[in-house]
Each structure stands twice: as C-alpha cells, then as structure tokens.
Amino acid sequence: MTRAGRARRLAAAAAYGGGGLTVLGASLYGLLAGEAKLAERAILGHFAEPPDANGRYGDGPGEPVAFVVLGDSTACGLGVADPDETPAALVASGVSAVAERPVRLTNVAVSGAVSRDLHEQCDRALAAVPAPDLALILIGANDVTHRVKPAASVRHLDRTVRRLREAGAEVVVGTCPDLGTIEPIAQPLRWLARRWSRQLAAAQTIAVVEAGARTVALADLLGRAFAGNPKEMFSLDRFHPSARGYADAAAAILPSACAALGLWPEAETLPDVRRGEGVLPVYLAAAEAAEEPGAEVAGTQVAGRERGPRGRWATLMRREKNAQPVPDS
Image (cartoon, rainbow, N blue to C red):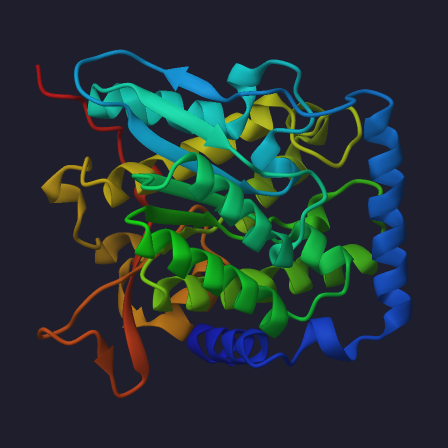
C-alpha cells in the first residue's frame, strides 16, 4: 500500500472512531492505564506539583502579547522544577524575542486533564484574559490512557478551539505525544500505544484545522529523540519530559506560534515541495503530519476556495527546519 493509502486509512479510522482505540480490547487499555498510574505515583515522589510559570516574559515597547495555555501535565511542565524550563515559558520567551514585545503568560493547564476538561479550563482562561492574542493547547496523552474514543476526544477539543477563536485568539495545538516511547511500557503494548497516539493526533488535526486553527505534530518529532536518549529526554519518573525534552517541544511549537501571530517572514509562508510540504485535503495532511516530525498543519485556500472535492484544504509545513527569524533592527 502506498503512503497516501496508509495515510487515508489512518485518518479515516481516527476521524470516525474506528481503528486501534476501539477494537483492540479493554485488557490492553487496562495495561496501558496501569503503566500511567505507576508513573503518576513515581512522579509524586519527585515533584509535588508543576512550577508556576505565570507572569511577564521579555521586554520591549507596546502592550504585552496575551498568551494563554491549556492542557494536561505537559502543558503544565510537570517534571521540571524551574518555571523557565516549562514549555509555556519557553514559548512565551521565544515569542517575545521575535515580536520584540513582552508576553503575558496565563497558564490554566491541569495535570491529569483529558480533553473534556478543556471546557472548564477555557472558562478560567477567558475569565482571566477575555481577549487573548495567542492560545496553546497540549492535550491527548490522558485521553489514550483513559480509553476516550478519538471522536469524543476531538469533539471537546473542537469546541474549545472554536471558543478561543471567537474570543480573537490565534490557536496552536500540540497534538498527542507518542506514548510508545515511554520506557516502562513493554512490547507489544508500546507499539499499540504508538498507533493509538498517532490516530488521535490525526483526528485532533482534522478537528483543529476545521475550527480555524493549526496543529504541530509532536509525536514523531519527540518520539525519535526520546527513544534514542531516554535518560536525557525524560524526567525522573520516566514518563514526563525533562527540561531538555520540553525545550525540544517548545522549539517545534515556537515557529508555528510566531506564524499564527504574523511574525514569520513572508518567504517562509509557502510550502517547500523539496521537504515534502504541500497543499492537501485536511484528512491526508493530518495523517501525513502524524508521521512527519514537527509538521504544522493549517487551513488554506486553493483558487479562493477553502474546500475542494475531498474536503477542507490544508497546508503541510515543517517550520522547525527553518532558521528562527531575526527581528528587524
């Protein structure tokens, strides 16, 4: 089967609730959930709670960029002790450097959250920041370990993205990470966890792009690095990222955050076919992104139309391969 054929099957299974998360049996879910609970117990012995990274980042003239973060323990930065090492703080600092403006970070993420918890987080975010400029959502791992079907998971994500967009925010979603890289999980469950993670990531991308936002694929990007160097990339619980792991995640997210805010150079806004980038129907772009390290998927138009015969048009990009833009002097 061609790669396009595999992509089509993967995206269709994720979008319509079929495939790995629904047909492989409750016993395998129980094993994966058990591994997650062991990791939770382990991390409580090292980190009582994630560091508080809320506040102002960077300098410069003008009003601060209003930046809100929602999601789970990864969005919180659980696994590091220094607030500046959390992914939210790293992205905030990076956006400030590129924009030459300060950034005001409001992080409402909660460790252990699943996608249905985003509604309450969104309430708190918009109560604190009624008109955010930028929103980042990192969610998905707990949906896999808690047996949430992709169709239900992405429904909650879709509603949250639409609320944030209605409030005026540009929204970036880091899709489900690769649970197959977690050391305590043994084969064949590790392979299945990777499959489930990628199916959810593809489904998330379809929903997010349809809602007018963009995604960054974290699974394969972090999967290779984490699998190759787990002692450096994972924190002490062997489940959550270390400072190095979060830095790699933030480096993948930052270019898309800057592009969403219109801070990326015009020359970098078009896909480069030499890197496998291009314009595709969103379901194909979503599935391709699940296997492309750091790939960004965002909605686009073809001949002035957002939709074609096979659905919503989307652009597949790999911005993290490009150099960070240098602010004008």
